[in-house]
Image 1 (tube, rainbow over the protein chains, first blue to last red):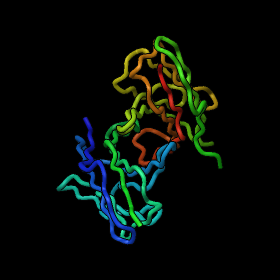
Image 2 (cartoon, rainbow over the protein chains, first blue to last red):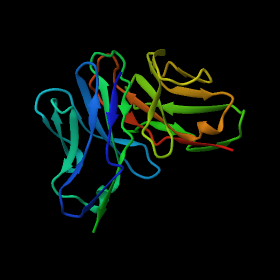
Image 3 (tube, rainbow over the protein chains, first blue to last red):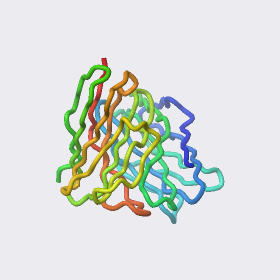
Image 4 (tube, helix red, strand yellow):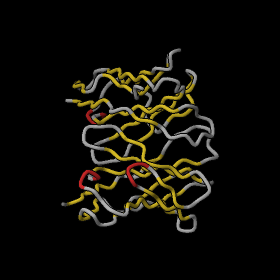
Length: 115
Length: 115
């Protein structure tokens, strides 16, 4: 079984400040990890993924994520937040040993960036 | 290039009715997955199809069914609608499926409301 936890329902940050959105996961094998963003009345937009290799992954719009195997975490980060980053963020996992590509999502974290 | 397209965008049904939702994947993508996103929650996996065959099924009742056509488009069918089926239904496509690390690309969804 695989699962994802996003412990914060909402994260508030001032524009220009760094942001972190937390994610922890559980899989029986090794994980593929993904971050998606959802704007109002829209589908999910892919931001970045971790497959293997460097623990720091860079993605779209200046976002990056840090994979920590010992803590089973994959936190999303950005050095300087923009008001336009305000949206709903989802972390997702799949077990690399599973043939299918079913994603298991966390409950989402709403990011609010204030001017 | 066109992204994943879903139709209709909105739908209102009453309890007991049947509904069909449609999805066209990104050109060249052969795998289609369906997810249900209830308001305030993360997406939940319903089905995955690849090369017209079901490759995965989530924990949903038999009232939910799907199929994939030779052009890789897909339909999701839900019978005997319940109030709890009210949700945003998301379709996602990807290039391949087996053991793939490729991200899934999502459409904007069909918002289904049950009265």
